Length: 286
Image (tube, rainbow, N blue to C red; front, side, top):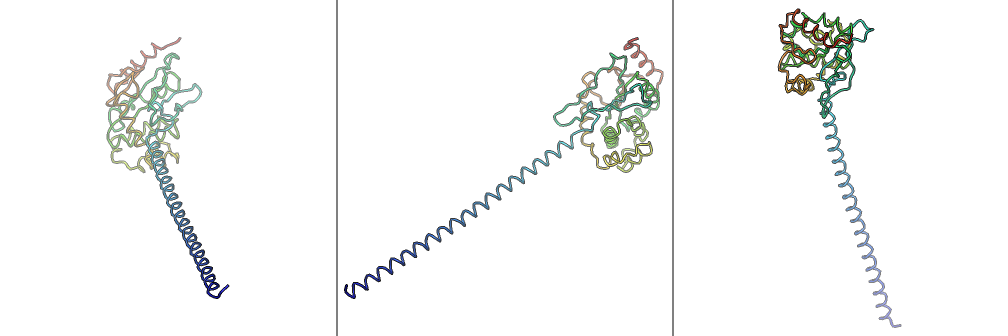
């Protein structure tokens, strides 16, 4: 082979190696570019997934908080607290029930007249002097009749003022944690009357404590305003007649005996007793 041919062969071989090196370099760069692109896609996808998780979590947390805000206390499934006597205890007892709240309407208490028991439903605006007058006049007698097992009393809070809401929320806290002290709370709140409009949470806690309700969970519930939003809804349901269709809308302080309205004077013990005795006679099973 001539020198020229040998030189051309070497040149061709060198060119081939250089071409191979360039192809390998191009492939390496292309592979690196693909890896970078895949990393970017993966990071982007992770960010999107994380964002979706955060959004879903926030929505779920907010929805749960909203459900909690509008869910009522235990033992007030009817939007009221029912006090009854079991024939053994010497004090009235609060009926235990489930909660009510979003997507769950209040469930009226069952009819106990077939057992010879008269149900009295008391709708009280705790800032209304008439509500306080009725209870100071008739409350002790009703409490005694409850213990005897002749009467049940169902407490409902109504009204629109700040004080009415404050009292209703406090009653809900008592119902939730110490339902047997429902009548005690009822009397104490009625005694505070219009002063509830300017009462702080600590004032209400002190008011209940002075009445003998010094439960820590009740105090915490009151201070957190746990049931304020719920009681606003319950009050509106009462005004709309959605609590008990047999009674219908309740616009202000009112008392119902076997679902019939008491129309006598709030301070007229004789008139109320007469209506109550007539009701007891009607349901008597003797």
